[in-house]
Length: 360
Ligand code: KG4
Ligand code: ZN
Image 1 (tube, helix red, strand yellow):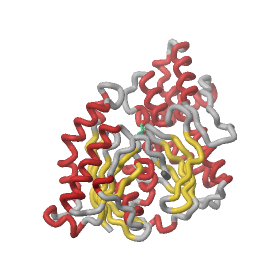
Image 2 (image 1 turned 135 degrees about the vertical axis):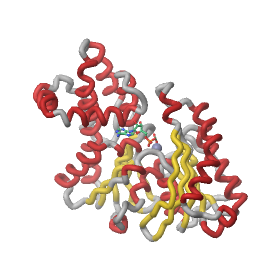
Image 3 (image 1 turned 30 degrees about the vertical axis):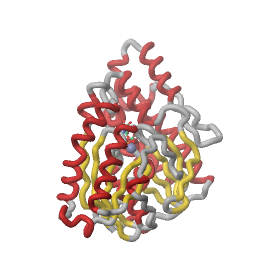
């Protein structure tokens, strides 16, 4: 079953064609036109600017995705079974461009549409086949998914395809947002996650400096809500902690690597602790990682290690690196699992919902 996915919820204009079969999804094309260079200047995404860029990029990106997938545009109906489009959550003006495009294509090509929740898309990135692997036939339910992006941080219990329960969310900043804000405080640029991650890596790779840091770490940032009884998170206190510390420390510019490392580790510690706690409480068979922050190398590595040691009968699943941050292959993948249950809507009923909740 072939699905064309469209994703425009934030600052990436993305279109992809995937082929779903059984429990596996193969990517035939995956085009992402990123606006990151444009928004860098402002230190974050400017909704009005993002929407204008989507308008300009969407049709060329659709065209590239069809060409790359080898699909004849004069006979689309023969090759594409459904169009999957992100309807929320996200920026309303950005989402609308993807949705209107899906409507037009559905109308013109006479192909059904499946509305997709962006977070659900991130989760289904885990079903995209990795090279030389037919891995996903062994993903077993129930699953705990640590879902971490720029807008969301949640622990999700997935009992079956399409059956999601949010066990806990962040009360304030999302993990990715915390990375972005901390990077901004240190004048490191946007988006902050990859920069903080690279700087932490640099410290780890400098043996002397890393040894000294481990012995004399004076930063000791808090691990907010780590031992709270629920699955909620809060990262705004961590942001305040780094701000105060930077203000107090006249020499902070010479300790950027240390600040990045400790900040990243504080976030990782909380995320991992709660994920493992949920995996035990719900007696799951699989632990998964999803969302833009799942690109973080240390988070991927450390969570895998802890799953192995603390819940050794549970399997661990992460999305291929290139499907971690926003893309349309993940939306098409989610679309496949809904399309095979024929969860289509008429193009006239396709509506944006910028606060759409997972599982609703
Ligand atoms: O999922 P995503 O692409 O967009 C949203 O749905 O929000 O996530 C973007 C977020 C940004 O906050 C970015 O800083 C963060 O993911 N991110 C990372 C890394 N790569 C991207 N955070 C930590 N480490 C990374 N390597
Ligand atoms: Zn996202």
